[in-house]
Length: 392
Image (cartoon, rainbow, N blue to C red; front, side, top):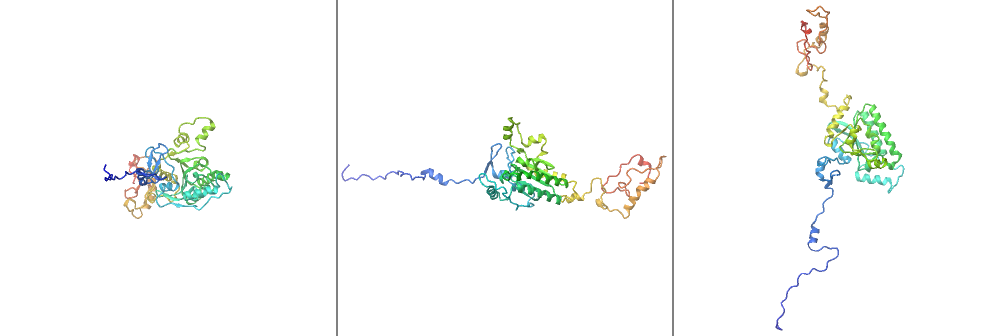
């Protein structure tokens, strides 16, 4: 190379500089900064079959797994929405609050636990009680919410059940209960156990007053709730696969040192043993409860849930009122119809030597003069004795 020639300038290749600590470089950095965080709670995993379910689809199916029909535990407000007619719920005694009479403390004070549960659920206690309508039928609805301290039963829960039973007896309404609970609330000690006797006594008084009650046990219903009001209603139903018992199966198995039978403490097992009256799928719950309410209140003529069209229809076999079926009865027809049975009974039976007798079918069911039977009744079947020529 000549001395006067300068070397050709070539740009230096891009050499990555030293990495700054904590800052990704290159393609990795672009991927990280473009990634969007997915909101939580969009997918739920079925506790039975393990399938991932889109939350919106699960809500549309009433929180029932579309693959295995597993019934998820429902929050109290969601249960009310699925059971009652829209816009008919009116909560009662929602202002009642728990008192820490024993000043109980474990990891944190009991009063702080209650405050956290109130903030989480937006309600003062585990039990929701109020009026509502189920397919047009007015009822008192009682719902235990498992999200509030496991649906445990304390003083306020027992008081609300007693108040609900008293109100239902005074207004002639049926009581429908949904339970989902871990049992009595041990933070309140003996006071919580006393609610077992209190709630049973309230339901007994309600039954003595002619009331009708139904309890639906959902997953899970255990402990003092199972051993008290949940098992003493007139009818006891359950959702499929619900865990129902007093102590848990693991505790029982370790205590008796025996292997428990398959399906122990599940709704299907208890139905076979006679502890339940029926197992009802969640999608059929409203219609089933409506039929049972009609059955349980059939002997209550003053029940406000009786539909108007049923009140207007005459009882089967009863005479219809005058003017029914579009016909008007002439004046004096009722008096003539009343006199007709006596005349028929006194008339001799032509062609027979026996003593006079009343013609079959005479009376309120007989024909009024004019030859047409009363509306709403079947004409009496003519027999050989009637063919004797008695004036009808």
